[in-house]
Length: 70
Image (tube, rainbow, N blue to C red):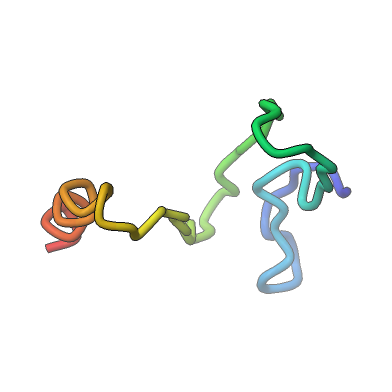
């Protein structure tokens, strides 16, 4: 894992999230907690990815998210 950084001289080289990788080994039902550190790099765009459960029970939340995107 690399330290947070601005874009610098090389396009696409900014590090905005730490850690960049981690691995969990969990048993079903065991809780997990982790800390992410984010810093927006100067003059650098932010890509946002959203992981969501798309089963029927989450239908209302999926629709709300779609409305926010408009």
